[in-house]
Amino acid sequence: MDVLETRELRYFLAVAEELHFGRAAERLGMAQPPLSRAIQRLERRLGVSLLRRNRHGVALTGAGEMLLHEGRAALDAVTAAARRTRRAGGADDPAGPRNRLVLAVKAAASHELLHKLLDAYAATSDPAEIEVLPSGTCEQEEMLRDGRADVALMHKPFNSLAGFDSQELMTEGQIAILPAGHPLAARKTLTMADVSDVPDLPLARWSRNGIYPPGPGPEIHDQTQLAQLIALGRTVAVFPDSARAWLWAEHTAVPLTDAPPVVTHIAWPAHSRSLALAELVRTATEL
Amino acid sequence: MDVLETRELRYFLAVAEELHFGRAAERLGMAQPPLSRAIQRLERRLGVSLLRRNRHGVALTGAGEMLLHEGRAALDAVTAAARRTRRAGGADDPAGPRNRLVLAVKAAASHELLHKLLDAYAATSDPAEIEVLPSGTCEQEEMLRDGRADVALMHKPFNSLAGFDSQELMTEGQIAILPAGHPLAARKTLTMADVSDVPDLPLARWSRNGIYPPGPGPEIHDQTQLAQLIALGRTVAVFPDSARAWLWAEHTAVPLTDAPPVVTHIAWPAHSRSLALAELVRTATEL
DNA sequence: ATGCGGTGATACCCGTCGGGTATCACCGGG
DNA sequence: CCCGGTGATACCCGACGGGTATCACCGCAT
Image (tube, rainbow over all chains, first blue to last red; front, top):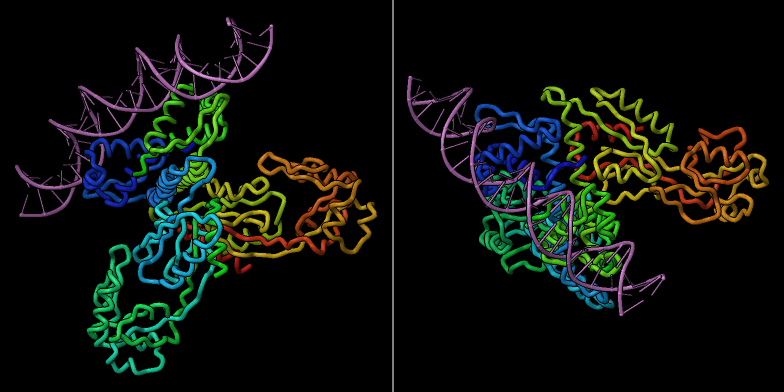
């Protein structure tokens, strides 16, 4: 029934993403003909056509679209299984399952919360070793899904918690971070409209998986770089309250009245069954 | 990095479940030696030992335990991808993605709700074809996970919603279903203690994936059979309110004051992106 | 002690299939 | 009309998945 090998999945995903057999084959480190045959065989075995071969490139059929989405999730699950198994390999002595947990956190947020969490957890009895894995913007979901991480601190509404179990940890408002000298910095509060409408201070744009949203503001991929640009009076940024921790003297933080509150969750794959993870979550909720 | 083929996963899961190479090989329809080699190769490739070979059978190592759990989920995801792709195959014309949704429902519950839902959905514009898939006790989760179903009606607290997106639809109390002539049937209300303590009416035990919980009551796998045994004065059962719909004349329903309320949800895999599904969910929440 | 049944591992063989190279068939554009 | 670029086909080879026969090991019963 499930005659679908992960190699075939990898091949199909490459083709479906490139929409080009040659480039896909190159990306896979193989020649184009075997790739074509593999896809054909896959289509024959599934009994559906996945690609519509036109002159000039390839298009996905409905079934292909489906396999693209479902296959990505499936392949993530497989690589997660392999990764987690490998990681569990060190603890071979059955006496003490010396667990290690990988915790993914967005680099630019939650210093305090993270600190408190790690300290509190380290103080529990028989804590596992926690490896903190800094992750880019909104990359935590992917890391949980493909097994690079076991648990993550995520921020609603920026992260989607779909498919994960999670516990709410903290809610905070958002602030605008402005150059200290700017007229708006004198205000007690601001609205989103206030900060998105300033011609001389276009909102910074964060990279999300290497792609930047459209807009006039500078492209940012690094918090220090952002801080600098703000200090230079070139841009303004919106951050959760806890960002006050890393403000410079040249920065001014002004609360935003109508920005959506940011809720920090601790999240993990729904099927996890690790004792160490449960203990970490328990610790986190009791902070 | 993810050198882990689904064939190997199937092989390992068979061995890990049987804890016996011979039986596992038989179950897989192959000979034992190639199975042994495949597992060895898998262990070498992952760089961890998965099984501890003792005289008399086999035991799982920590890594093996991990691969058993994660691998099950991964294999489910793969078969789900294959199944959903196959199912999406019929709708090849790009004009109208003639979607079909498979809805898993526990056979013995929610007649009314299901009816209303199907009627309301059929009345929407351009409804997809809905295939209703009766599922055994608590089998819906599995069916969503391995792609046999796209969406399910699930009942908290019997089903776990972990890993799915869901919407609450309805909450109901529970009732005890008793033989009409029994002394307890005259009471206005009952407690769980009342019905679990009656020596002449042991609580029925439902099969859950072919396994029955321990206890003195009769083993039930069919609602008609249960109804008959109650009518004969041999057992008592606890059901959600909506079960009143199928009571016999020889049955009496008595509300339970302290039974946990049953919440019916509509649930679907968190990564689903189907328009038809979204529309069905919208319809359901507006009932 | 010794042979027996039952475990998983090894040795060897074969057919299939995954992959490579060379080439074809098709089509749009200069 | 030919050229560049697409994916498909033809053919070949080596690797590997799978089968049979057998071994090595161990507990147990005689």
